[in-house]
Length: 211
Length: 177
Image (cartoon, rainbow over all chains, first blue to last red; front, side):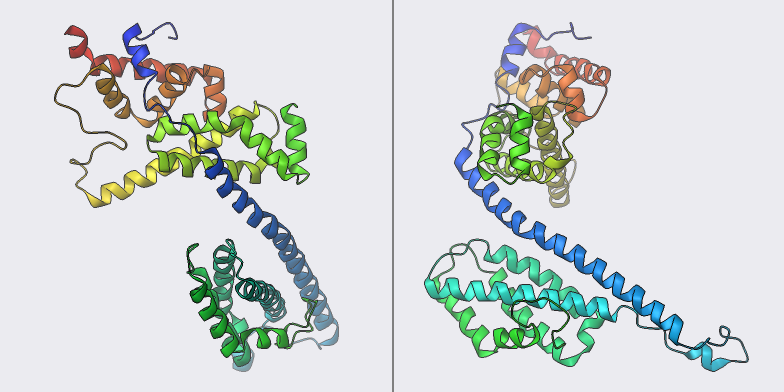
């Protein structure tokens, strides 16, 4: 089949099919490089999340093990004659995992907002702020819909954090210094950073946070 | 420096190696993507996306094909997905029977051979067009096309045969003139 060539005029014309102009090499590289910088920050974060998940699983396993050893044998499962057992609430085994995840998220948000505020003060242009804010915003919204938000204090903090992250996420690369300053002032008015630092002890993402 | 050494440096986190890899392959990738999409902005977006994906997945590259082939397979995948998304969006906006094929420019009243051929290639089914562009326009071998598209070389040959037949048919009246 390969010798079934088109006639030479057609072959010649085909070579000009959607002929490409000079590639915008530098413009493309700038975009790739920016995304790679984000990737390099995210990858260790993803590894940390995995570590957190494994730690949470280990904690759960130990907890369940201790529970089995220390709690006396429960009566057999619900029966028609035992409505109390049937109505017993399901154990909330994920509380620790949600708590760990929330502390990790708040810790990352605190670090991000600190950097953002510093960049606004110094007048430097932080190109990756919006992308990072969007990523944190997605996690924030998931946490708001999770049992983690059942704690009133945590929910209020996540709600205030959502507003700040949403504003930063909507910042365009050409946003004025005034826009950034307004966000910073809003952040300071709500005491978001201070409250974050209260629940996330400095230099740690451990479960010691007061949530 | 060979591809393996360059890949090793990229995987070790050397940003300069990423730039070297990009410089070595960007022209070929961009040219192929542009041939497929015929739009400078989309070609730029898809090429960027292809390299970003390639850097992310570089650890999975097993060296079973040339690095350039592997990069092109990612680029083709990104471009075709982009074209399908665009086509779906356009179909939602206009009556499907009135919708022009993606990338098709309006046919002039008295088109020359190149315009007619461009129009005919644009109207080829996606698989035929991809193989035709890669083989007859860009000069890839059937083996390279097969590795890039994840098909057998025989499939590539068959699709090229059918693509050429359709083009001959579409340009038959032109040939008679």
